[in-house]
Image (cartoon, rainbow, N blue to C red; front, side):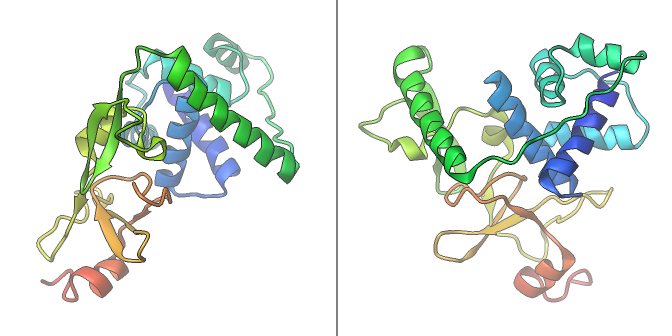
Length: 228
């Protein structure tokens, strides 16, 4: 039954983001889950499970916090409420009202301040964070005398394990056997193209990375692709 939950979440994410790209929606849902549950869940896992759903598979179970986060995102109080809607209840229609821009920025600012205060004072056991170092993330102490708060990120094991900056050449494996991208790109603060091994956001600019395309490969990496 988690397959139907995931499918509906990706469908709703398409409406909310305006994007049909699975990668964009997976990133959006990953951020949403962490915002709602305060626990991370990687975009890679969401994308892989959704690909299974598209192939007709439902033989998987999502972690409890992911189930709760997705059910909440779809407008249900609990996963049981979601199941009840499938058994004959009326599916929820999610109306997301437009927010006044000034009010939104004000609330966002208050939220950032509240988060900082919570990290510093209400969560004394959160002593480890992660920080970007040249081409990868590293776990570091929560030390504001050594690191800038803006550089510290909550530990995400998926980022630590799979996210690297690389310098691809003609020998790089750009796609897997199913033609799914294995490389993403974005520009650094100096406007230079950089390449990464997983989807996500650029560690320095915060902008969402784009999946590699044959056009980008030929123009910037390997002019003879795919006949190199």
